Length: 493
Image (cartoon, rainbow, N blue to C red; front, side, top):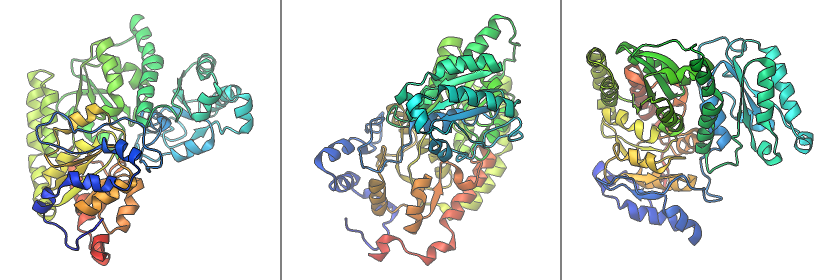
């Protein structure tokens, strides 16, 4: 591929034949791989109801995908942040070690006493466990952990690949252990080989909540032990409190008069999960990882759900008004008061940072909801999206993305390391917003980068206060004087 020395203007970038770019990038592949990957790459056409890409399909072997596994989706995303439970990585030590406290799920509590989010528990499978099975070892582990950490509220068993392959009966162990220790024990069949990405792990984890947690609510409800709540009770679902995001969201919801009675998984508790079916509305942040349990609650308990977006002032105001519309005039009036309250603060942030960021371009590639949800925050700062894509998105994610992107935006699903680098070399975005696996590749290419999975040790980015931090971080990334010391590849060739 040939690169020019000069960076194209915004207009020139918009005029690039991106479909020809896709074909050029694909040309290095064998015919079979090219045919498969071609379906996952497209240029969005304004007015279309979806982005025109295939998704949630097995990655092409050898393509250097950024995806994770089902275990990562369950333990690392859904269950791991529940702070008052002990989460056992059941299998060899490596999977648990790799997923140990890597997502910055903030929580309030005393670690090792009543909270365990940053601790790692593993059954440390050895060869003998593969041969003879690990059920007895698991049962002993649960007993010992309950003795060591008596204030835990329960245990989840996060299965790694060998467990499914050797056929251990973790469900039987869970039932017996629950009776012995008198606490909730949840077996999760999230072996890494299941599905095509971490997305199935989300689904499996949601099903475990449905099958092992909510029945406790049903039992207590039938016994008349569930206290009647208020008309304003809501739950925050699918916010993992990265850098304190859920706390920022909670502040706004409480300011408009709502009562947040459950928040999970970030800074969440087992008790909150059990009581979630009592709320009046589920507010879903990460649709991809928690839409399953939200749909179940709607079908079983009649609880409506709403996907909201608290990235950037435009979407914050829009979401607050949409949430308030589900309640009475009192809440609606308070929502307007809150929006007005933060208007001066928001304007000050925009006046400070927009002149420094106006016209800058960004390429996104993340998981979950961020390939679409963070777009308005960039736009509020005058920045423009040139490409976006999901690691493990589904078709409905790409349908939702059409409301966030403009015509001509490059769309890439499960993009490989090679493809992403080649797209960046041609589109020449000013900023890359992606994950830790991509961070150092692009920084070594002299490209400003922000890590959008865990906010590069910053945050929160949600809410009005979070937007100020977001704007500051984008400015720091783009306008650091260090970039003058090194050149991008296309300036060297």
